[in-house]
Image (cartoon, rainbow, N blue to C red; front, side):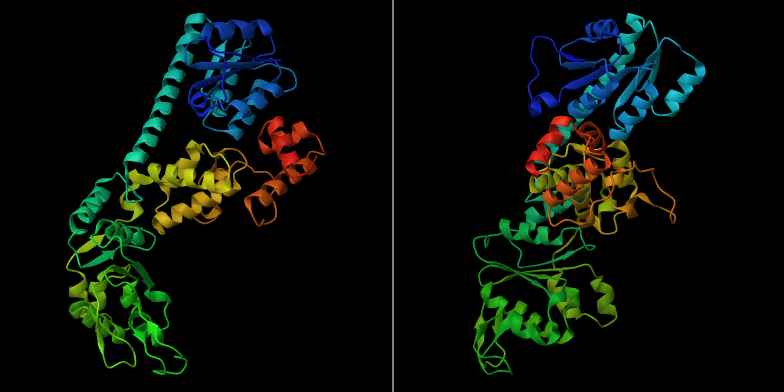
Length: 474
């Protein structure tokens, strides 16, 4: 049997309701449930109760409470087993155990297994309210912090770039100052830091924003075709040139050209690029006539161009022409205070992309991400969270949903013990295919028992039946 109570208002399935504090009480004595729910009732707190531990687990998976209050001695599943199952589902839930058979050994064992408190029955009303009150205070602080993070995400976006750290604030300030006036900019930073986003921001804020923004990845162009790509060619100028071609500089006329990974440009092309930047004119391959252009040039590289100049791998005159204004993008490990904002941003994006609600990450998953040094920077974080959102069975990402390399350190020793996930499904073409495979696999392992399959998937029976109907598995 299960019940729910909340003062003066019926529970509504809405995002606003989900942000309220939630408590689930599991006890096989209805009288205890009535006493506990009445004693703890207060505005802004949803209380759900269950006399059956299995129903209590299903209730926990449906309601996602922040606190669970459970008796230790119950039929079918005792409080210790329930504690293990709850923490397996979501280790961020605070579980409080109660028992009339208190012992120091059982209390130590409960705390060792992850309980946050252990109370002796009959519980004194003052003690109960004090202990649960402290937990609720922490819960409300966390909810408020999450709200502030959401608000901060809206306020910490600059032209599509996420950041609130002092280093990123300085980058944003430099972009604002230079965008209206600059003709050439050099953007530097490690791979995956977002140099392309900075280039786009500069273009959108400059007077030429209504004109083309043309991109060339210099590391992806065959050396023999560089000059033709940049400046165009005339028909018959070389084998295969069957018609005249407009180069990217001409195509970007009155706008901006973004030369990504310019450190990979051949030396011969660098000399011609320097002339085009200085004189604002280009000459197509095979043509005797120069054409005037009006183009802003933004170059980007992850190489150390000063070292390349010293080793004669990059032209010194071109370097000084491009680096009149230089913007360095900090690595993610240098601005780890931006990690929570970036996580929320990517989780929101992938939730929409996969049509799958993801509420956030467990504390231990957050710890794993915070300990990583992110050599691939923001792009690596994006890939990690995309993988995790795809793999997550529940609506909260745990360690087991992260790529394996993140949760291992020092060889094969686990950094944090991952919770065993349901048996891995074969690679799927899409999220829907992946979900169908997981549901079918859970039903097979449960021998067709829908309650057991729902438990394996860590979802409610109603949610399981919906997915079965959705994927024609009924």
